[in-house]
Length: 259
Image (cartoon, rainbow, N blue to C red; front, side):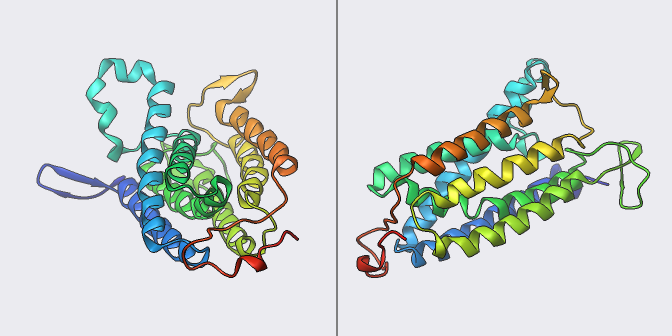
């Protein structure tokens, strides 16, 4: 596959950049719409989108640069060529999580309620980003003889990018369904941590690109195990109540008793 979408003079636009921007766009729309339903202002949804996107990009890029430090010592200016790809999802998740905490603290909103709002759009943006990975030729799978393989890097390979895309779209639909049905703040965060990391852990076994390993597992698998354990702890540690903003357009607080 050709990773270049089109060129205008010296400017090269990559498919990865196009899909990443579409992911950010649809996630922004999701946050703006859901923020109103959850009792926040439209401005809050837009602020959340801006903070998460910027911090997510920075966190994902920093993680990739750290993991490939030898490469960037030889060409340090390429650190800023994020349009060519080169990000690590879990680094972006950490960066975006810090942004959520800072924004909620600054706006004096319940952190876990904002966390639920924020993470509900994450699988949608992630799904589109993985399509960008396929077009960019990165994050590919092991060689295979199956008919559904894709030709990448001189071999027919498992389309692990599409495996993750499909899974994230299903997860996105489930999280959207759960948001109005949750019984306590942080439930959506916990559900995400209990579902996505195990799936990522399994998909990593089918990846064929160069991956850092430790104790026989990829770094992403270690992170998956850690985040899954965090989800288990949070499930029992979070207060069993649902709290939404007292100001704004939210429903009557009397309807927010814990179930």
